[in-house]
Length: 145
Image (tube, rainbow, N blue to C red):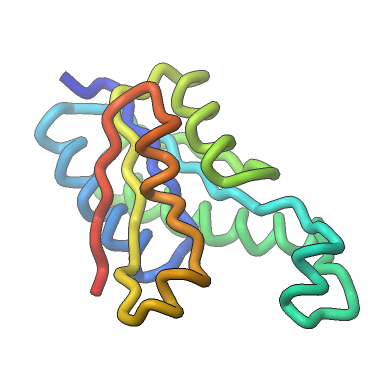
C-alpha cells in the first residue's frame, strides 16, 4: 500500500513521535522514507511580531535544520531503512505537500503537539489541519501530549 512515506521532521518531541510512527508503518509496508525539514522564509512582519530587531540568519537556520534532519535520518538508517532527506525553505504546508507530490509519496507523517488552552491554540498555526486539506495523499498526524 505505502511504498513512499514523507516525514516532516524538525527534531521536536512531536516529530520524534512521528518518526517512531513512520518507522512502524515502514516496517509493516516496506516503504522508503523521505524526511523533510522546512525552514520558514524570514519576513520582516514575522520578526516584528516576534519582537525581534534582527532578522534570523537563513544560513544558520538551514544549518540547524540540516543537523536535526541528519539526526532523524541516522535513527531510521540504524533501524535498517532506506532513507533520503532534504531541507526546504518556505511555507511548511506548501513545501511538505509539494515534496510529497514530487517524490510520489502515498503517506505524509507529521507530528502534532496538542495545545492546551484557547490562546495557545489561537497563536500556534494548525499546520496539520492545513496540510490535510492541501495534500494529495493520506496524512498521519502523530499526537504528542
